Amino acid sequence: MDVNAAIAAVAAMAGLLTGVIAMLAFRWSEREQRRPTRTSLHTDAVLPPGVDTVLSVLRSSAVVLDEGDSVVKASSAAYALGLVRGGKLTVEPMLQMARDTRRDGEIRQVELDLPRRAGRGEALAVSARVAPLGSRLVLLLVEDLTEARRIEAVRRDFVANVSHELKTPVGALSLLSEAVMDASDDPEAVSRFAGRMQIEATRLTNLVQELIDLSRVQNDDPLDDAEPVPVDELVAEAVDRSRHPASTKQITVVSGGESDLHIWGNRGKLAAALGNLVENAVNYSPARTRVGISARRVSGGSSPAYGSGALIEIAVTDQGIGISEKDRERIFERFYRVDPARSRATGGTGLGLAIVKHVAASHGGEVTVWSSEGQGSTFTLRLPEAGAARDRARRRTAPADGSAPGDSPAAADDRPYDTDSHTEIPAPEVLP
Image (cartoon, rainbow, N blue to C red):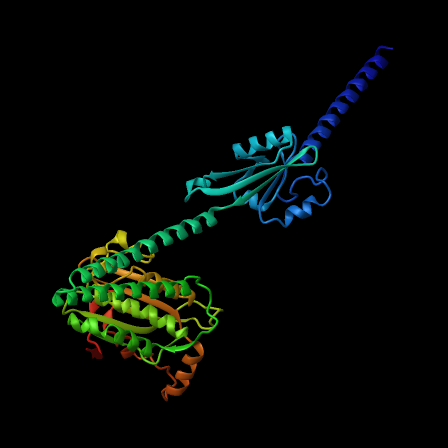
């Protein structure tokens, strides 16, 4: 009897232990099934029919919370914004909104500034909207407003800058017209004031024209009306545009580099961009100095948009006042001037380099600057070459030995300035 009782007791204890282990395993299994994961996007069983499909096509970041504030479902955008980590909503104001909405069923909306991860960059501006989803769940939709706010700030600054720039010549014209009326009996004064009015009217005309030019190029969209544009003709047009101010200051404009180069783009926009660079070089150079323009072909990465890996590099070098390091970061901004007093004296609007930047971007290229205070500056346009025109030129001028034109060492030396060392090289042509 004692042996049988002992065996029965041992069996009972083993059965009890087995039951406890089975219960713990069942509880652990349930907890693992309820744990949220990115791959399963949490359990779909508690979501009303069709909600999962609707949330998957929303542009907003979507998060669904249960009655315990646990994340039932979250979109990939919510993870990307850092709203959800470890199955929990990490933004306390949004979590409090969800609790309030769960309590009274009222829809709530708020705009918040969220810090970026690791403190990188400015805060994220978001709009959060919370609404009940059935009797147990709460839906949170978050819209990223950062880019929209940036664009709005740029628009406000642009309108303010335009208003300020227009007010200056308009106010000057108003005052000068009053002065002309008061000096109607003094022909010499009338002539002097009329000359000033003409200067201000020209400045106003240039400002309006550059605003029109900027509005045409600032979208940075690929060009629909592109064609092969000869670089030699662009350089000649830019030089001709600055001929009068250059001769007035006795500045020699020098052009050189490789010939028979073609850029793929819009002729009018390219001419305006290069003309602005040359005009700036002349305006900011002391009298009796030189401005150099050089063009050459450089290797570049493969570009599916243009079908050619080569780039055309046009460098405009001056011996002017130079640009400080802090100003180099902002010179391509609209209406930004390194020397406002000098710019107004030369009739500058502060839009020329902004137009150059947008023209380069819309052509799939870029504009860069090298400068040293007191030594001068070099602005370099790098734009895609017209591949078809290049191939035709090579077949037309290919030497008998099969080498391509421009491969000779002399081609690389045919530049007025070495843009890397900023030293002068004898130029093949001097333009008055």
